[in-house]
Amino acid sequence: MAATTLTLSSSSSSAVSSISLHNPTPRFFLLNKPANSKLFLSSLSRLSLSSTGTTTTITAPRSNPGEIDTSFFDDEFASEEEIVFDPPTPPEGFIAPPYFDEGPPETEDEIAAAYEELYGPAYSGESYLGKDIYVMDSKAKKMTAFGKVKKDKIRDGFEERVIQVRRVTKVVKGGKQLHFRAIVVVGDKQGQVGVGVGKAKEVIGAVQKSAINARRNIITVPLTKYSTFPHRSDGKYGAANVMLRPASPGTGVIAGGAVRIVLEMAGVENALGKQLGSNNALNNARATVVAVQKMRQFRDVARERGIPMEELWK
Image 1 (cartoon, rainbow, N blue to C red):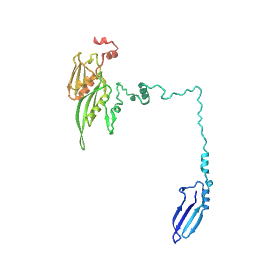
Image 2 (cartoon, rainbow, N blue to C red; image 1 turned 60 degrees about the horizontal axis):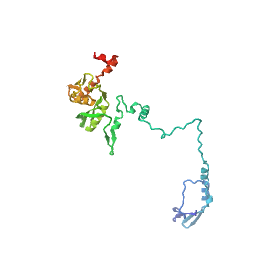
Image 3 (cartoon, one colour; image 1 turned 30 degrees about the horizontal axis):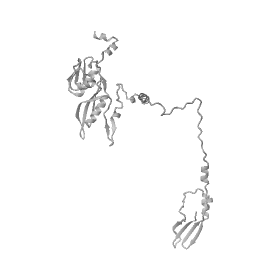
């Protein structure tokens, strides 16, 4: 390391106007706090001062490499010892558990049972009606590339039929808000049917919401081997009255309006239906559901009474 020269220049007055530092070598480090204060003070005591007119020069002597104090770094690294990992010995009879990838793959039933144990029966996807209604919204929603929610058609074995789509308005302070109301009937044509209603600003959204609502209101229709009702029944909902009667094979579904759609989606092939009173499509559809819920199979009545089925026909 070469000597470092510090030059002080002053004017005719005694005040110092400028300070210039001359270092022949490109490497010069200025520390905020020296590592060894004694070494720093001893180096300051060896500075030489020379003055020529208005210029004062301070020269630091060249230091030897052996004079640099490195005890601070040596002590720090010398204190570290090599650490050897020594795990404890396993006890007698210890059997290591198998790795996650080595075991056989879990079945869908095991995964569903695990979810039920952790989060309850709602996460299994099975309702009291045997259909997936708890995760219906999560299956219907799907994000597109533009950040909008795109709803796909749910594939769970149910068919959908739209009964009615109407424009409805709501009067608010700023004017009228236009929406669409849709009435949808879903069914698997094997004895399960449901009626739902939904509103949205678009027709497609209203139909999808009403279809999800219908799946949450699924009922079971009692049918005979001839795909008809076991007995006659009447239903009432609001001002709508619906009359349902069984029919012989080959008759078909003789009904109109919402009653016909509900019976066809339920899988009824031979029946008679009549709307009495109101012509409201939603009330007639729900009145049909009420009438169907009143029906009971002969075997269920015989079991409750504790008598054989032959006694019911006497």
